[in-house]
Amino acid sequence: MYPTHSHVVDDWRGLPAAQQPEWPDLKALRRITEELAAASPLVLVEECDRLREALGAAARGEAFVLQGGDCAETFAGSTADAVQGTLRTMLQMALVLTHGASVPVVKIGRMAGQFAKPRSSRTETRDAVTLPSYFGDAVNGMEFAPEARRPDPARLRTAYETSAATLNLVRAFAQGGSADLHQVQSWNRGFLTDTPAAARYERLAGEIDRTLAFMRACGVDPRQLRTTEFFTSHEGLLLDYEAALTRVERESGRVYSAAAHLLWIGERTRDPAGAHVEFFSRIANPVAVKLGPSTTPDELMAYADRLDPDRTAGRLSFVVRMGRDRVRDLLPVLVEKAAGNEVRACWLTDPMHGNTFTAGGRKTRRFDDVLDEVRGFFEVHQALGSRPGGLHLELTGDDVTECLGGGRAMGVGDLSRDYTSACDPRLNHSQSLDLAFLVAEMLRDAGRTTGRDATAAAGRRAAQPASGGQDANLRRP
Image (cartoon, rainbow, N blue to C red; front, top):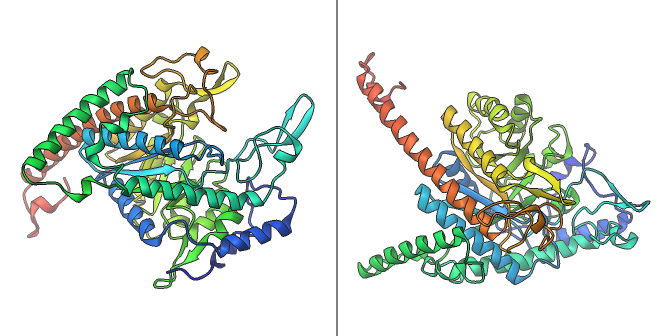
């Protein structure tokens, strides 16, 4: 289906490109990117198109998105156990959300490519020694040593190979029976079961088992219950890597990223006149933009006009990361601007990045702050009559001790016990399930409100007299 690498997307070269590594060996970089340009695609066009349709449904309120995974993947940490742990956690969360909202949940992993991270400073100093900052395993190593911190283009090849191995695991897990709804009880094996969230999940799993047993007794056992579809995503930060993995679909001539189903532009690289926006405007995958508290309505429209000029539902998502104290004040003007200009974006909340602080010498986040930003996100959309499309979370299936609070009431003294993130703190399995149950309640409440509003609107329409031969029930109230 794909010919060789496309050069259509090379217009970004020459534009300001933030957060790019200072590669010391440009010949090696060219050699590696030429290898990647000839490599097999990691994802298929059909998969990207299915995700775009699913995101369009979420934008209309017909589905809900769960996007989650590591802050920064590492080569050493991309093991089968770690990948399966994250997938099982997301399956459990999706089950809880589906049960609460009665809508399909679109599952997108921050995995199989999240190997690069933007940094606030290009250098790091320890004990009077200054070295390049760690920009993720795709660029350099975490160890504070000159050789490890030297950007190495060969790491781009390792990032591709590790992504391919992760995707093989994801597809085997999703299609090989592990995601079978009949296995809902087994998804909790290997996790701590003495938490309120785990006990609540076990009760839900029991309900689902009884429902499935009833369906089998009635002779109903649909194939859709035995498999699921996971999509992959990462921040499209390293433009040399992303450009090398673009491919052209022969039938349509459209250019796709073959690196992930969805790429996003981060808060530090979202310059509307910059190289990242230009690159993203050339690929046909669904794309997203992170919107921090400094985002203006004019910037939002610049992203919509550059990235989604045809206003195609599912093409563009906005991932809001305002912070719990600001989301209720700053988000409404952006949502109203989008609605007033017929922007059909899917709105997601990233309640992690705006709520980071340092405690005990480590970066952390409070579960209650994360929850409050999600709640504020829902409140804004409910007040404006728009659709909250989903969650974007940094999480892991491991029982790490990186975020405070949650059902197990983790404190600052617990942070040092099992803090393994390569960059930012993640919700652990128990905290992730806690959040899923609470968001399911928000979705359920939002559905009731929507139903009441729809009933009231129908009553107002029916009460209006028809005029001009037009059916009154077809007119807006």
